Each structure stands twice: as structure tokens, then as C-alpha cells.
Length: 112
Length: 114
Image (cartoon, rainbow over all chains, first blue to last red; front, side, top):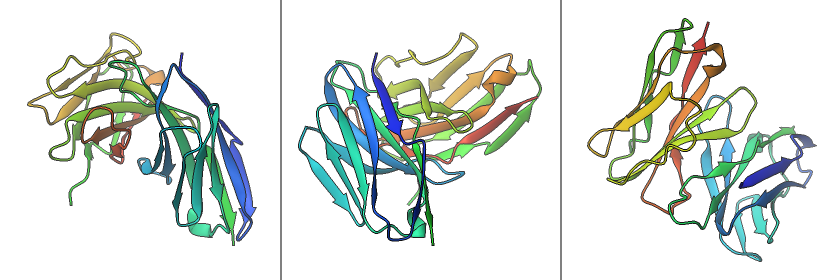
């Protein structure tokens, strides 16, 4: 069964304090790994897709990386507006398996 | 531009009643997903529609749950004989096609079963 585990569950940082969020996964062949951001009371918003080990994607203060077992979301010099829950998901490379399997998320709080 | 629209945004019902939740996907998107999110939890897959193919119903938790998608566009999720454990936010998402992991989510329908 495909599984995604995210850590930590919650993280508090001071503005400007860089850190990383972890996403460990087991999947029967990886089609893609996805990062989403979710603000309170809203649906998740797509951030990145990673397809193969060694791949990296960047967007503003965020950088996502991928290995064969895990992905990291690095946040550099965060600002209060980066506060949100960050969700990781995987899609298996199995015929007909289109669903995304999500982790529980990391709730990130950036204090000014 | 129009995003994914869900209604109602909030629904309070009594245990044992039936409820219907509606999703209008982005125009032209052929894939449509339903997920459920309980308080403080991640997203639980319910069902997936792609074009005219048979839907993937593997995530529906019981036979009280059903969904349909009419004309390849609007979808309705129906929960019969609601139970308190059905209380959650029900999220709908659409994507341009199969194999795309870039899902566009609506804001969800919050269901409370008393």
C-alpha cells in the first residue's frame, strides 16, 4: 500500500530562520511526487511536481528536492506569509492508479 | 477565471439524513476527484472520474457513499443515512487530464452531522 509520512507535524520558526520539511514515501513505482500548500479554510494549492531522484524545483523562498525514499521542502529566510500547512502527495506509476496519496501535512508557523 | 466551485460551503444535518454535495470543475478539465479531510488530518481519497472511463471508487468508505458525474462536468457526492463520523470537509478537485498531479481544489464543503 502506498504511504506518505510527513515530519514534523508542526514547526514554529522566527522570520528569516531557514529550515526543512520532510516527506518520506513508499510507493509501487513513482509517477510523481507533489507538494501543496493549504491555508486555513481553503483547498490545497499546487506548488511543485518532482518526477525522479535528484530533481529539484524552486519557487521564491521554497525549494523541493527528491531522493528515492523521501522529499524535502526547504524554506529559506521565511516570512510570516509563508505560514500554512504543507502537504506532500505521491502518484503511483500503475495503470489506472491516478489518485494522489497525501501525507498528514506539516503545519508551519512563521513568527514576525 | 473561474476555479472549482463547491456547494454548499457549509451543511449541518441530523444523523440519519441524506446529503448531496456538488462540484463544478474547471471548464475543460477531464479529471475530477473527491477527497475528505477530517479536522487536523490529511486528505483521504474517495473517488476519481476521468472522461467516460469507469470511475475509481476504491476510496469510498461504505456503500452509503456514492458519486456521479453528469456530462463529464458537474459531480455530485451523495451520503445516505449520515453518521457522526461522516463529519469532515469534503474537497473536490479537477485536473486537465489523466496522469496530471496538478490538482485544482475547491474550497470544500464542511459537513457537520449532529
